[in-house]
Length: 107
Image 1 (cartoon, helix red, strand yellow):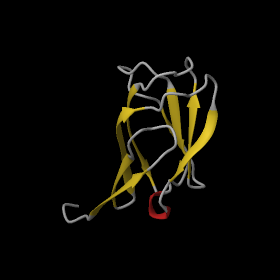
Image 2: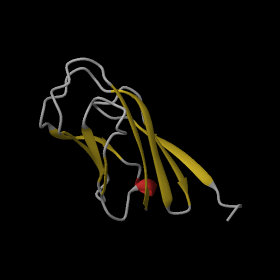
Image 3: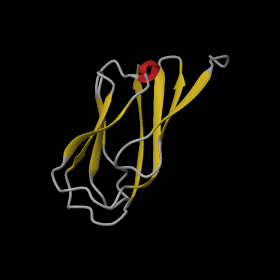
Image 4: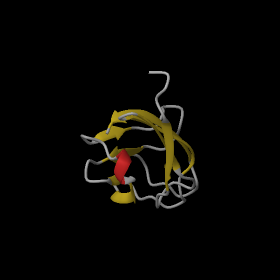
């Protein structure tokens, strides 16, 4: 529907340097992030890093991995309880590292 309103929200997290952008049209949310991680993320670390705005919470949890051209390996999970979790399945991150995420889900 070309008349669908689009809303934008951003989410600040504890390990990403800039905010995650969320664009919503109807009940579809598009995730976009390009930026750096912080400089200290332990290998195997799993933590809640932020909270999704109530109108943007997914119906089911969705996990997205970084785009392959980035060197870090942090998987983000957007939970249906409103939490965003991050799991570092790669090496310990000791310096700011570039990363990119793109994805979409139904809310």
